[in-house]
Length: 195
Image (cartoon, rainbow, N blue to C red; front, side, top):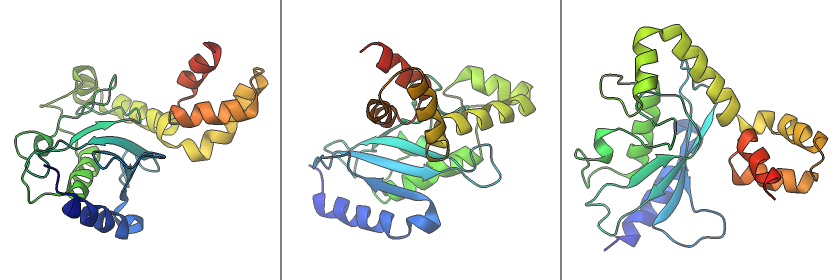
C-alpha cells in the first residue's frame, strides 16, 4: 500500500529547492489523487535541452516506494533514451535498479542527468540513437529545435496564440487548447479543427 506520509515528505522536499535543482512535482489541476503526479525538469545547461521545461507524467503503483514509479515524458523530446513517439523512458532506476532508498526527486534528477548524458547504446528510440551516433551535429540541431518547439512554451506561447487566432479561432479557446496539449501548436491545431 502507498506510504502517504513518505510521499507527502517527498513532495515537500522536492519542491523546497526547485529554483536550484530545476525539478518539481505537483498534482494535476483539480486532482487530489496522490498516485498521479506531474513532474517538471529544466533542461541542463550546455545541452540541446537548455532553456526548456519538460513535463513528466508520474504514476505511483500501490507498492511504491518498493516498486518504481512509472514515468513518461509528456513534453516531446528528441533523445536516444526517450521515445519521440510516446515519451517512454529507458532508464535503469525506473526499472530493475530501483531501490526504496530512492525518491521521486532523485528519479527526476536522474532524468535531468540523462538529458545531459544520453546512452545511445541502450536506446528507447533507435532512430534518434542512430542519428546521435552517425551525425551528432544533426542530432544537436534536431534536439535544440524540438526543445524550442515543445519545451519553451512560455516564451513562444504568444506567437502560437497569435498564429492560431489569425486562422479564425477564438483566443480563449486557443489558449485553453494550447494548455491542454502542453503548447504543441500542431496538436492544438488538430484539436481546434476537429471541433
